[in-house]
Length: 399
Image (cartoon, rainbow, N blue to C red; front, side, top):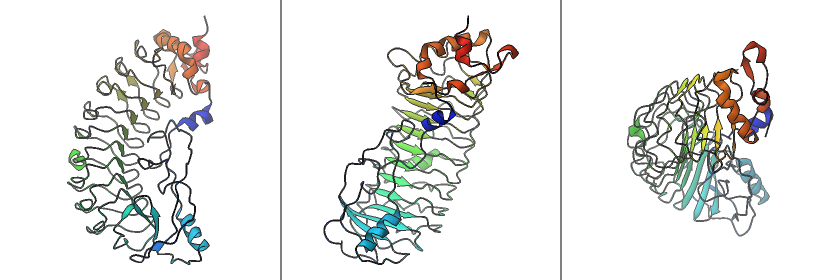
């Protein structure tokens, strides 16, 4: 592969909220074509014409945390342009409603207050870019069929404990970029259908396992870009269906050894951009189905010899930009096997490798797997002096 920094950066996953289950990555159902007549006006919400979903072919992004796809939000401005094309001049504070398969999609950009009442057939609701700091406990009452709730980029400081009780069919909850410091106990007690929970970029400093009780069907949990310093034991114990866990861009220095006990088949684990110093043997042993492991941009100095031994299906490993100078013999034995040859690549660049006899095991492995190696030019020796600045592959290939 041999990419430089720019190419390696392109492999980094996108941190956008995940696409909706059952869609091609577009919350509002792909491209829009105007047909039919406007939907009836309800509750002061401005209607738009019927939308027809079309195929939105998207290139698979390996680093994307949800099904290899990046969510593409429908800009509110586009909806306004459609309205103007119909000769409607909407109020700047109005919401818009759009008929969609199964019910109505309601989108509110920078509203002064939460829209109420909602159309009874609302299945997608977006209330974003507002100054709202709290929501009424009855906000979702009357919208029992709601499937997706997007509350990104507001200023929410707290949520009512009973907020989600009226919407037991909810599948996606996006709370990106708010000011939440905690979640009320029991928030998800009627949320067994929830599959995606995004709490990225809030002000969470600590978590409680009790906050996540009730999420039996959760597949994607994004807690990235908060201020988490520690995690409680048993955090994921009730999340048996979890496939993706994103804890990137926090302040974690250590992880509880039982962190991954609970999920039955975790596939993607994001731990990049933390302050982790040690990767022990027990953490990953409980997840043999793990396929993507991101540990870049930490402070790792030590990786236990058996840390990767149970990872029989690993397709991608990112250990870039840590403080690794050496690794124990045997660390790589289970990786890069003919049956599972790290098909999506690995990156160990940006570490201060000391290229002495203690690194012979790694160097032999690199030669055998160099076709899967990213940032080869940035994977260099920091010592000894005679080899400083040399590429590891170059040293590996020397007599």
